[in-house]
Image (cartoon, rainbow, N blue to C red; front, side):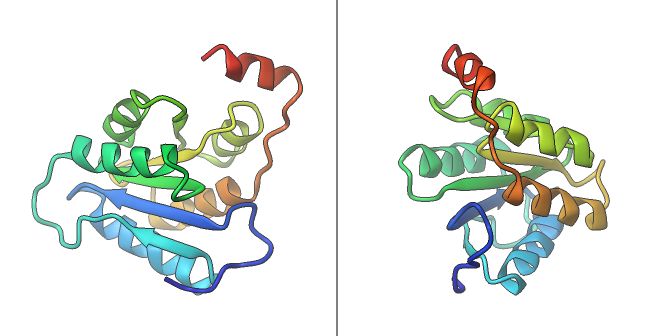
Length: 150
């Protein structure tokens, strides 16, 4: 773990992937560490075949228990990870694919997990999406009422 970055909205970020997302997960982890953001890698620790639901559940439960503020999940499309994580109470995982979808996931939905597709989103854009996700505030107001209905 590294020192906490003072100008991010979140103190701790956990990250996990499956085998398809392993390489991008490692790039995102390095990106976060280089920005001095406290990062907890929940695996896998190599690119051997694994089942994405295992990692989505592990990361989602960590956030539910408030051991990390937010999380990042990476698989081939982002969808499998998001579907699995969203089964956990209080988790709001959003598959994001551009800057606007990422910003809105935080502003309107108060997403606490960013799900990325390594086969669909290039590394450079993925790193930008991570930065937007971690630095966008939830707007509250009318959106809070809707979040409470979930």
